[in-house]
Image (cartoon, rainbow, N blue to C red):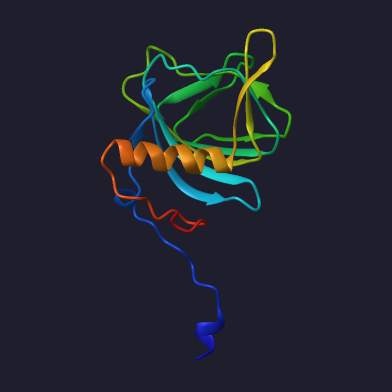
Length: 157
């Protein structure tokens, strides 16, 4: 049949991929990993008052806010539910969630390349890329009692 030759769309329901507690006031659900393209797609939930370490992106980032609000310390714009944000490669910033938020801030990120996490002097302290996120998510799933996730884009390891 001709439909057997057409690539299939891949689906994962929200409950099929767990949110794992990162242990710092945030949780993460990894949706897609493409190691060849350096793509990692995550949904992250941040508690009020949460701040991400200052970081620089080596590739483009696409973000969509589902609930709550957040901003970059370095820029005046605030992302609210329904906001879309594009970040070009090389952008450097510090994500902050207002302590006054009522409830969780929920954001979808599609990230190409790596996050180079920076100290106060601009030195790289760690690098998070698709391979690291794949490994970390699987380890957190196992540690928190979830079965091995069947992510879109990578085979089970």
